[in-house]
Amino acid sequence: MQAIPTLYFPGACEAALSFYRDAIGADILFHHRVGDIVDAAHVKPGTAHRTLRAGVVIGGVRFCLADGHGVSPGFQGVSLTLSCASALDAERTLAALADGGTVQIPLRATAWAEVFGTVVDRFGLHWTIEAGKRHDAA
Image 1: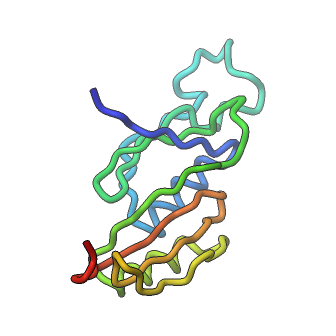
Image 2 (image 1 turned 30 degrees about the vertical axis):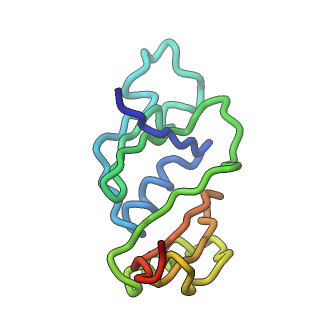
Image 3 (image 1 turned 180 degrees about the vertical axis):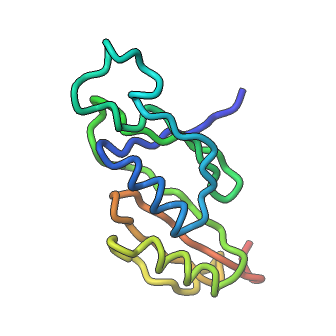
């Protein structure tokens, strides 16, 4: 068994796919639109272009993304953590995700990481960015 998180972006999934590909190098595995999969007789007007299911890999972890018909927008109680190779990479990653979003905690040293920060991206998804384990951390 494998757990694969699914993230819903009502009406904005295609934009999210493009953003994450460009901002953090997400690898798009597949992208199925409603009109490509569902029989035309069952497609609701105005939804053929929407994402039924897409697969991406971010930092070696597979996710599914979708427009999520009937799913309420918003990500409450969820944060995705990106462990970066260096402080410079963390800086670049935080800045890329902050484009159209909001940095909540600027990068700074913590007890467990050389740098740590958080950002809510333009889609409302919370990200934790960190790099470099502190040698004095347990």
